[in-house]
Image (cartoon, rainbow, N blue to C red; front, side):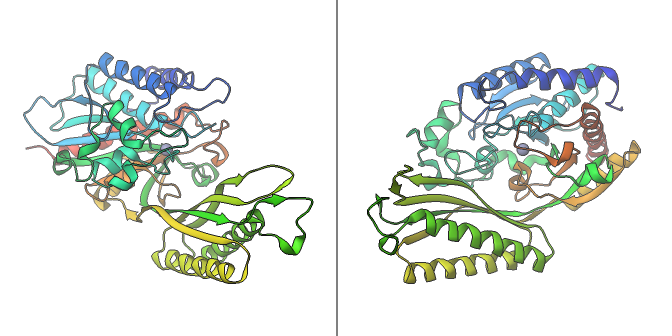
Length: 420
Ligand SMILES: [Zn+2]
C-alpha cells in the first residue's frame, strides 16, 4: 500500500491543519507541554483515537496511548510514537508528522481489516521538547525508569512542580524510577520524524533511516558577580557577570568548533538560554544563569570538552572577579538503533522504490531513550531548508506520506517475522 494516494494525503494534511490551530495565537506555533493548548491537543488526539476505534489510556509517565489489539491473544506490542508538544514559536511538523503518520497507518489497517500478530500502540510521548524544568522526553524517560526524585521535584519558573503536572495529566509519578512492565513485550519502537537538517533535501532523498542518535548533555552555569551603579563603579572595580559569561560563550563556541573538526563526528554545543540579573540598562549585571547544550557522537570528544571547559572555569574563578558554578543537569547517552530494524526499514523503503540513506541523527528523540531497553529505530523525511523549531518549519505532505508507506510496510515485515 502506497500512502501517497489522495485519500491518505488528504487525511495527513487535515490532521496537521487541525493541530496547527491549537497554538498560542500570539506566538505561533506554541503548544508547550502541560499548557492549556497542550491539553486541548491531547483532547483532540483522544478523540482521533476513539474515531479509529482504539483503546485509549494514559500510562504512568503521562503518555497518551491508542491501542489496536491483535485478534490473537498476545502481549507482544509494536509502538509507533512521536510527540505533539512544541518548543515556543516552534513548527507544525516536528513530532506531529510522526503522530499523524501513525494515525494514518492505523486508519488503513482498520479500513482493510488487516490482522497483525501483535498489538499496535500509537503513543503521544509526553513532553519531548526541552521545557522549563530543564528536562526533555519526560514520557520516554519515565517509561525506562530514568526520572529520579531530583528531576521529578523540580519547579518551573511559575513554581509548578514537575511530578504534580505529570499526575494531573493522568500519570503516576511514584512509578517512574523503574522500567515499565510493557518493555519486555515490545517487538519494536518505530518513529517517523522530519529530519530537522538539510541532508535529505540537498541530496534529494526520500527516506533517512536513522542509525544513531548523539549523546545530549545540558549544563547549568551560574555566574555570580556584583551588581552596582553603571555610572559610579569604575571599570577596574567591577565584577560584571555578563562580561564573564560572554567569555564562556565564546570559549564554548570555539571549543566545540575545534572538537567537531578533530573528531569528524557529530559534535555541536550551544548556549541558547541566558538570564541576566537585574537586566537593567544602568546596572552592572550582578548575576547570569545560562544553559549549555552539548550533542556528541564521540565519547572521547565529549569528555575532552568537559575537561577543557571545567579548566577554563577554574582559571576564571581563580583570576577573575566573578564566581562561576557549572552543574550537569541532564544527560542522555549516545545510542545506536537496532541493527535488524534499520535493515528492515531500508528494505521497507526499497519496496516502494523510495530513495534512502542510512544516517546519523543530529537531534535527540524519544526513540533514543527507548532504544536503551527495547528494539527501536526511526526514519526521517525531508524538511525545507533544514529549518525546525521555528514557524518556517515545513515538510511536503507527499514526503510524509512516503514515510507513512514505509512505516506500514515495516509493520507488514514485522508481522511476517512474528507469525507464530
Ligand atoms: Zn521532535
